[in-house]
Image (cartoon, rainbow, N blue to C red):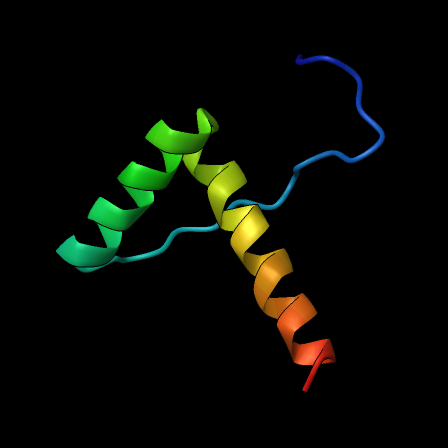
Length: 54
């Protein structure tokens, strides 16, 4: 298998995106040089943090 980790990613998720959102995701992965999954994880954390500030 892969490398051992303290934070295994064992949940799979399938999403459907419109073209504009997919293009934004592609821009993010190119600019940040990370995977699509990493951009999505960061987005979830950002939205969750925003909930706490309301």
